[in-house]
Image 1 (cartoon, helix red, strand yellow):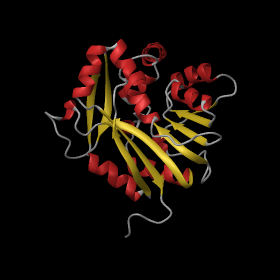
Image 2 (cartoon, one colour):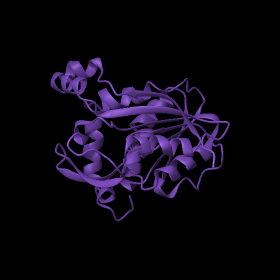
Image 3 (tube, one colour):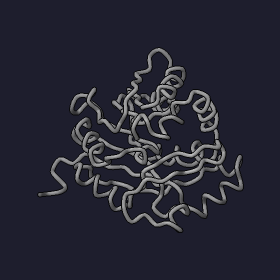
Length: 242
């Protein structure tokens, strides 16, 4: 999404970002559902170079650093980057970058792992971004990302048959975000065209903490799939031939 988009204006609003940061630290949907599910796909990350692509306020970057990784964090929202700098401190390697423009600041094979949480639905050209991810990953490097589940209740009344732009209401924040929705098959195809081999796909699962603190949401998430998490590896050989 470009800098003149509805979504960018919201994510760059400092008041919203502060509320968002406060909310996702210990909420059901992020802290006790998507985040632990995505993190479960990580290999040993000690001394690994990780790009947190779409880092938001830096919560996952902090977790990755605490686990021994060497983390570079990027986000296109200056307000998010400001909060991430507070979270990560003076030693944080944080850059304000729009992933829609690729990763021109990074050399080939710069990273061992790329972590991209709930971000690809803001990307106009997903194949281009996945190819950029592949470029900056070392041989055998790992991409982990999460996104809306293809069987999400949100899509039951309006199945995704082609790439489309949609406005999504976040009732708890009283905002409307503009997102890009794609058929799941198109996402998988973009991975293959970028030479990223799928290793594992899991449905996000609510944790025991979710059941303890948010029992009603826990039950809902057990019965309804909303997020899906995937791990892919940079292939040594082309996956798609002309």
